[in-house]
Image (tube, rainbow, N blue to C red):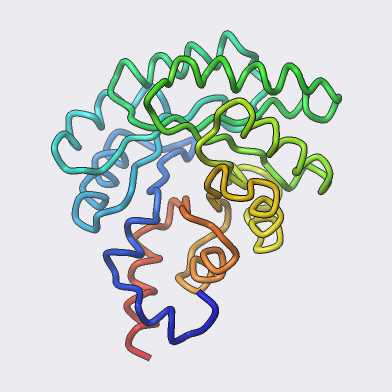
Amino acid sequence: MPAREAAHELTVETVARTIDHVVLAPDHTFRDVEQACAEATDYGFASVCLAPYAVGFAARLLRGTGVAICGAVGIPLGYSGMAAKCDEARTSIEAGAGEIEMAINLVAMKSGRYADVQGEIAAVRRLATGLVLKVTLECCYLTDAEKARACKLAIDAGADFVKTSTGFGRAGATVRDVHLLGLVTAGRAEIEAAGGITRFRQVQDMMRAGAARIASPDAVKIIKDFYRWEAE
């Protein structure tokens, strides 16, 4: 989307369908989940991203709406290990998740134990056969070389999306990281930008850089900002 004219072709519906509505704040409640599910249905968001414990509750609310449920695995730091990640993924899948988002094992990645990183992703991939699998790299803790290596590990293990951030790290998505991941994936996986995205112009910048999805707890705020931008 190289110009403002192209951006004007966007509609509120197409913007909403790129957004995953995230409900993972440490102090959130089932009332927050219920509200997010209602908002996702009203606006037509791509998915609601939830802790495994809340997936079954959301599945009942979202049945028949077309909004996917994404179960979060290993959030936020990813170093719980293969067995724990598989248990979390299994819990979400059995409760009705259509997508799984897992954080890579940062301890393993920073230690150069790449087989462990890839093995965890591959194990969750096997459990999530037929479902969308997103792998979160948490780019703010990685060098560019590590980002590229982690991205390749995720693709080789079967990831459908490579995601920049959990939103819990010291920094979130950057246009530079989205562009870098796009160069590495070369069309073999989609890119999702997450972390600190609260305005439509940020969404626009990430999409221009190559992001296919945007994850944010401020999904409704982004849509309202889109309306303001559209009126300019």
